[in-house]
Length: 296
Image (tube, rainbow, N blue to C red):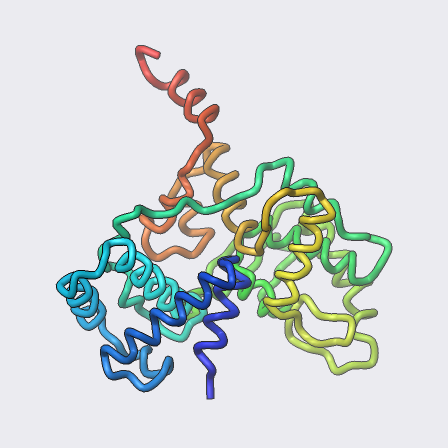
């Protein structure tokens, strides 16, 4: 039996990087909704319709709940159903079309190019785990894959000669993502020399990235590694695996990549989801404006 609540809590902490207080608040809000809709558990929430969710929010407003409270409950609902669709438990997200929070959409947190370079320079290439971590981080930044997609990436979906990876994302849909020369360099060495040593006498596993006892990596372990490397790099903020995905999208757009291309690379069904990454910095906005506006 799948423990959807535990998986959701892991998603919140590892992929979204929320605080313990936010995690607890989101779970409380979902339990309150279950009671209001007479749902027994998290598993039965997979069968909730968009209409039921909308009616629940309407009743909250009619009951005089503050806009900030409704916004938080909506954020919890959206996070839960985004988790379910991203991890393939649902094909359609019933919360996707719900009215956005009155407090606005929070911009994704990302790393500067200098911070990414510092982070990727941290693994010790003289150790087996360090080299694996280097290949892992380079792959995450090169592809923008979700941490769940990276840890579950099978060897069969990695095509280094043709320089691409097939990521399996939302709804078990595959998308082809090019691999850059730096990521390919470290992946080739990792697969040829490092991975066999990590595997040792253990039975082979399907996944590309494995631990030093021959099992596949977990989202929690990747989160821990990135947090540790961020601290050693002197990055003065909390860094999560999802921030590498945000950074991937942000840096592509800041360098002129087409929004539709980034949408395809990230595996977003709706381009409006990708548009949250168009938070260009002021200097970049000024540069584009000066070059393109006739009266600049």
